[in-house]
Image 1 (tube, rainbow, N blue to C red):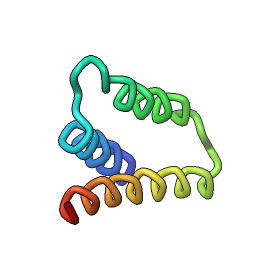
Image 2 (cartoon, rainbow, N blue to C red):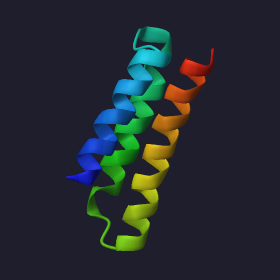
Image 3 (cartoon, rainbow, N blue to C red):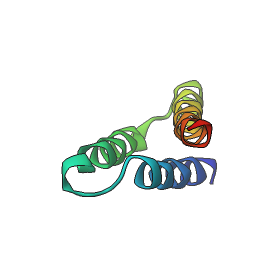
Length: 68
């Protein structure tokens, strides 16, 4: 469930602060691709690292937006 939450928050942050229109669609596509590549990971440490990275990036996008 933690993965789904991190994924959802990250996609929302990208859509809100970067945009989802055609020229910026590659950001969202990259995130979807990375999460799909990681679906078969069995190493718990690697999974936790990727979740933390997603949460940190989402936090950074939101923080930069609020700082502006």
